[in-house]
Image 1 (cartoon, rainbow, N blue to C red):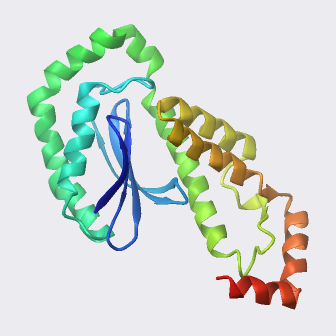
Image 2 (cartoon, one colour):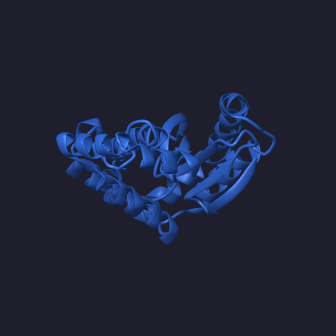
Length: 228
């Protein structure tokens, strides 16, 4: 396993020896691990939910930094996705439960001290965060699929809008909202790139016509395949 990028208490990107890219994300009440394609998390494979808050949307606390590091340390030996899943379930979860047992009272006190009980209820909405995460992950899955099919289906690099799991405005809103949960400019750029790719999803008829025109162009397809 190789850590490609890590921001204390916020997230980390790692690459396994089998080539899989993995994204670890610390949210206000949980840590999640997802597969990653084109810099976008696509499929959640594990999460650990805490009985207290570990950060706000804008500030990573010591607890969130410790939790991310514990999880990363537990994965230091993994080489492939199967090993990763097994380690998360059988090792990382145990270490984090131990952290909860040893630091739970202190972490709850910090939560209240940082934002107050009322603010916690009003400002931090795990259900809302989970919904945002689900939207951009489902969008990421669609991106992964269409990018794999550019040679055979979408050589014009435009895609039928009907493939999107949600309306474009809803995906746009989710990506912009997700950017509020990181202070890292690079992560913001990644989320913004998702908005750029979203522009490639156009009306089905127009997308199909543009792609079919190139698919019927033998010279273009020959040149495209030669660059693969």
